[in-house]
Image 1 (cartoon, rainbow, N blue to C red):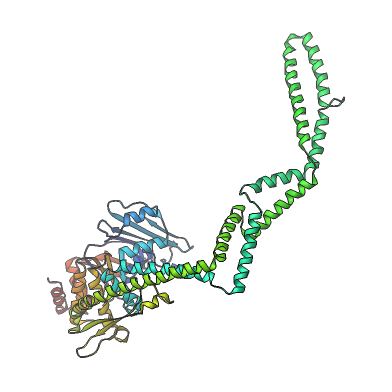
Image 2: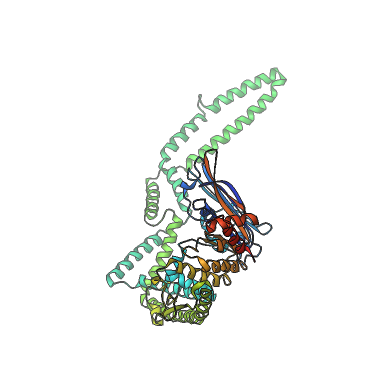
Length: 559
């Protein structure tokens, strides 16, 4: 259930924290007071699109935070959070937070860990079902009607089985389409693949060779310069009068004479000997290095040609030699398939035939389960409608299934082989007509509420939100709608925004939204009503604060 909702700087709300209660929570107030802001805030924290124009004037950012008690949630929330790398729930509480700013920053968190909007949306589908004043129009959509039927019958396993078979068939169709081409195109594809695989295989590529090639090429292209510099250095270490080693010998003789005069200088001669050994080693190593330098134009051309070849392959087939080699492997597989096209087509056709048969079986099974569950749903909804003021009305479902042979054709969706039409006969003696033919939005709203009453016992979503879905009804029907909300709240937490006193009176917890002006700013505020203030609010909703209206309000609150 939703325990806490905090809203900061959203529309007319400056900073508001709501503590919701289990069961039936109702929210009332004058038109324009800001009741729907609460539902909008909840939608935002569950991943709805952020409209930055809703940020309160004078503020740079908006924040919404919701805390849910998920101790009894049926969905595998713990595994889901762990899989996504998010913090687990502490003490059975899930904390969702969403903020966005006028500068465009948009951040969201789950239990303090940053996350994505897509993940908030996924969590929202487990936690909250929101019905706005126009959501009953979704009942006109065949896909929504199928979803309602399948949810009532718990047909997800059969539906998923059909969807898996459909994906398998589509994969096979794609593979077949790649092989079924005209002869000219077939010959062109063969030639191209043979050229590509031949060119790559002829290169005898190694993933690590390019770096060594570039190093060898750089040395070979600079061999003349390297030889010149090395010979100059060797000459400086030579035996002529200006050479370093010749000068160093003279230095050695001077140090020896110095030591003969002063014993304290004898150690200098030792240092000189070490230095001389180093110079001799350097001259030897430099001489060996120069012996290895070979000015070979043929070798340079060979390296350049190899590098150009590798660069050419990368331009055609991938950014690196690893990519080129992977491309070659894939091309070889495609070539093998094309070269064995007839055998491959035969295999694919056999698998497609089997896949079509399995798809048809899965579709028939899903249709069978739907037909079995339809009478139960119709009976349950008809009963609910009778309680909502329709008397001896009748709810029906027309389901038509495609021929199983059509399972191999195009145009199928993961929903199965069936098309569905919800039908309704509000009056005795009249035939049931499609819901889309019903003109009254009040009737549509009550059909939706009847369906939700039936589904409340079947689905596992813990929080149901009704935003003025009782529009265009009144009188005794409003009393029944309020009672229906209370019945739903025995199994789920219900949040309801309403303008009808009988609907509000059935709630266990009543919140009032008011609009105040403070410091020349308009604010929306909300507080929980104690019993005596509920009488005043219900009387206002009834249109008067007269004693008769207040007496009526008290009677509505009576058990």
